[in-house]
Length: 148
Image 1 (tube, rainbow, N blue to C red):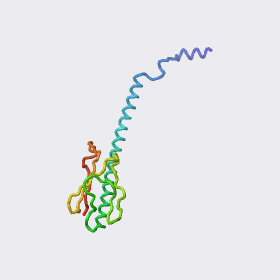
Image 2 (cartoon, one colour):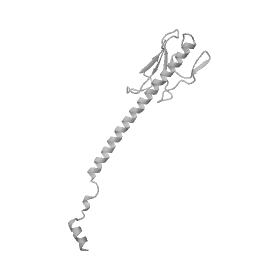
Image 3 (tube, rainbow, N blue to C red):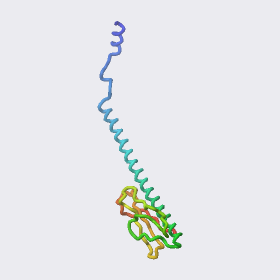
Image 4 (tube, helix red, strand yellow):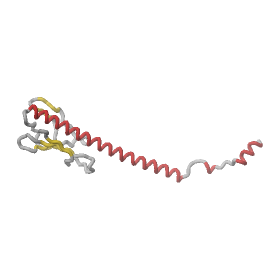
C-alpha cells in the first residue's frame, strides 16, 4: 500500500489533461471541411472535362461517318438538313452510323448540323462545351467540318 501512496503523490492524476479542447476540435473539423470542398470542386471539374472530351469524340465519329458517305456517294455528302442531329446516317442504302450520339449531359440536347454550301459539298457540326463556364446547350464552342 505504501508503494501506491508514493506513486500517486509523485504522479497525481489530473483529469484536465485528458481529451481535446473545443478549439482543437473546431480546427480539425474546419480543416476536414476545407479538404472536402476542394475535393468536390476538382471532381466537378474532372466531370466537365470528361463530358467535353466525349462531345469532341462524338463529333469526330459523325465526321468520319460523313466522310465515308462522301467516298461512297462519289463526291457529295449525305444530306442531313440543317438543325439538330438525330436519327442515323445512311448512304446508298447502307447505314454508316445507326444512332447519332446525343450530348452526354442531357439526352434532349443534340449536336447542331449546318449545311454551309447548297451543293451538299460542305457541312459543319457544332457542340457546346462546358469548360468555358457558360453551358446552356445552344452555343457553338467546338465544331468539325468537311475534310474534302
